[in-house]
Length: 541
RNA sequence: GAUUGCGUAGCUCAGUCGGUAGAGCAGCGGCCUUUUAAGCCGUAGGUCCUGGGUUCAAGUCCCAGCGCAAUCACCA
Image 1 (cartoon, protein in one colour):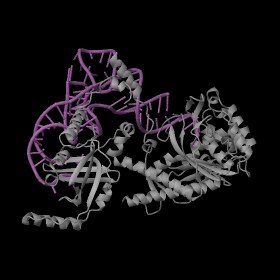
Image 2 (image 1 turned 90 degrees about the vertical axis):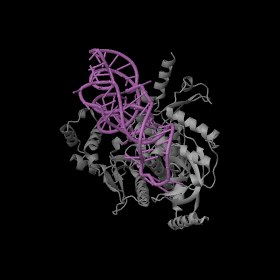
Image 3 (image 1 turned 30 degrees about the vertical axis):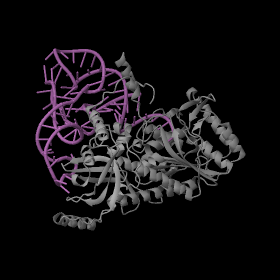
Image 4 (image 1 turned 45 degrees about the vertical axis):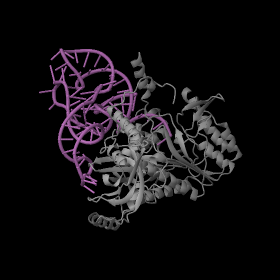
């Protein structure tokens, strides 16, 4: 136990519900002989597996035999499968000498039927008194009830864990989003669809790894604690190492380390990386988020485009298969997944459109005709247009008038951004005003960019230096020149393609989740503890 | 950061014109060997987010704050 905490300082006034549960815990232990916090159990069947062992023939044969046995006084032959299961109680109905309850595990729900005549007296008392939320272990034949519900007819039960906390409502579950995020452990058992999203996320990440591994990429792990937070333009979290007495930053991107791997000779690397950005929070931004960065020596942004298209298509196809296996409606037209009101079609090839072309369609003028561009900007009433650089006006117009033209229902690569708004990207050899970069948009969200990476150390140094000049005082505290990275480039990095994909956002799309908080197990919320400890102090004073 | 909405029993939610707090589930007690969201009967349960204000009277109106959500902005 920890030393005195604010919570210990004042006795917690437990609700009547908790008091009743504690009383039951004591009764189970002292009167009925069931240890409320049990031990290892071997040979368990998942509830879905147990259900699958149900045989109507065996059930009918036993039922008939049991009726005859009752008349003749003999014993009924029983060929029903015996299963051992465990799960959390999510429904409980006490019918007197017969108790029905539903157990839930990660595979689903299964009814447990406990007949007073089939089990010892203490176990029957346990079944009657068990609470919503308790975890039970039960053994018995798998059969069904008169109403047709497949169930385990328990011949023995024991308590695995007594739950003391008041449970959520058994039909509506936990629906307040704040409670679902703060008490995810309750959300996950009370709302099975929530738990399903996280299981799907796990399978998606596995599939991404298999895909990358099959293509010969090495998964590597690079520093999260960095002396300089580089590789992206974002505010980092700061921390400190005591023994080294050294300021450190949580990484905002693994890019500069992964490129060092290329210098070292790893030709194809990726990292599924947690990044930390000290910025705003909304439906598609969490302060810590997972991305995958990929670098391939001797590739370019086109290589990354093919890879991304195959990967996203592959995941989408597997999700369609999952939906089909789960009995959900699937679209015969191909890999189509619902996302909110949308139906997104992940069929290859994805849409490819050049920035310049989309600009012309959306804005109606040539992006290189700055007079026309500025006239258009004034025409739509853009603020401070005169103060902005030509290319910044282009960028603003693009965001306002061209991006909305991207079909949210089709994954779309927007390619060849203007060099002026992508300072760290390699200009195209044939047309230096644009650069070898694309962004992929799906469902109106930006999922990630890719680049033909810059590997000329002199140009890289010049661009870094230029970027530092633009930094204000606050920025300069975390924007420092990574000289070691420049040294690495001087050693020589092969030409390469690089890619970053937002895994959380991809999972949102694949699982039909509206908010990034629905695909992050424990999203960051404002702490309640500050307010509570203030309250405690106030009470004591 | 701005705007809007929400915050009432453990959970899900009502609460009229400002008149002093309601339901269902969960809980507790009783009955019952076939329930399926909730078997039947009974019973108990409240910091109405917090703090001020207006009023004879505030869950309700006003102000400030806290938390959550949505939209926008910012950031990518």
